[in-house]
Image (cartoon, rainbow, N blue to C red; front, side, top):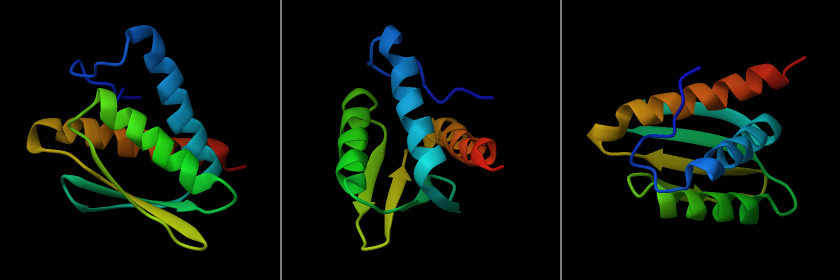
Length: 111
């Protein structure tokens, strides 16, 4: 599986697997759908619940801090939370890898 942690990420190397694991857990537990309306935009739909929005906002804020090329927009809802993930053209491959990782996490979690 392609890694989506690019060389331009400023998160210390030792912390990168932990961050990836946080995203994997979120995807495995909450990802209800993913779509790619544009080559530079990934839309993730997460099932809502107690504390989920806060968890998502915290995670994407920390990710934006080390990978400034990501633009995350969180759209809260009563049942679902949509997260739009946008990148510039130079980081399209990173978005591809993130989408691959998200969909793989949901496949692994399916019985």
